[in-house]
Length: 245
Image (cartoon, rainbow, N blue to C red; front, side):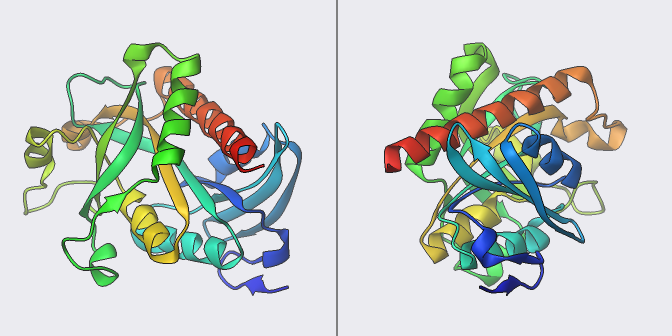
């Protein structure tokens, strides 16, 4: 038994499947959908729960905003024995084809964050596990209109609001990237380095190029999409657990 020093949870309490999210309150909302959920710990932005969904034992942990803090969460979960991680969260749209409320399964992440540059060479890809991606996409399609679900490349960046330097959103939009968020590249790179599976699904909360003009992630359509992505992540975890048994 070992205490994870940052998450402040015991390694023996951690199963092999993990769902992670930025918001501690969202972690609690996910835990409410589990059977026999118990809170394992709450330290800083890291709030942890354990329970079962359709027989699959899993842990739910929040990781805060941005790659550095999230990376600590991913690393400690892996040290505790986690083999599969799915991230659920929100993202800004980079494509006019997908409006707020759409669900995006991230197949890979463009690495415009600072953290992964310190872990791997510049040309190293940040790619999702194909089995996890397939499970997430199938689960999302099963309970949502086809036009509200897509899969493709997402962008991970550190800056939320603009500054004196132009953000690369338009360049990546022209390259076909469909959403921007702040943690997925770290998850995929760390998963590759440590030999585990990872995937991610995000709910679009608006136009990423209009954040400075006003940002409201609390609209009903966004809340409904977050609920839908949580269900998809849970169903995907259950499917992956069945495949492994």
